[in-house]
Length: 225
Image (cartoon, rainbow, N blue to C red):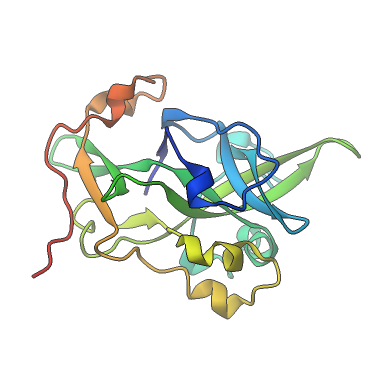
């Protein structure tokens, strides 16, 4: 499952034309959990881009290091930590890609997963609010993961769910029924995503060079039989 995001040079106005009242996009070639991340939410009928803390922190969570940055789609309705947020508070995190690690004999090889045409992706997530005082609060988020599709399953068993742009309003609308939401929690289409190996420098979250995204091998992508 992904533990890092690549967020750079996103043309959100083209991907989500109705986006309004947006705060500046948080960009990073190697964005790690427990950092602010930009998310799109539906507020008062408008789509807004706002920073959230990446790591779900419900009010009862005592240890910040235990804040999950991912939630498995199969257990969203079973775990109290995710159930209420999934039914009422969903968002998407726009990215230019995300990192996964392929387990090898003596190490792990990082890969950057992107849209095959290197366009932006909308990753499905949920969020919650923790009030520190009557007027102050912190909003946090966790990505939702689904099984990897057949194209990328040789690299990892889990990937973030990708929300199609045409389903964005349905995903964000708090009145959408669970059956319609669950229909979106599926592996990405085979032809949508590709992945290529990158430098192991990305293993260090402090490494913020644009070279994080430079391929060191060919892209793995779906080939039509």
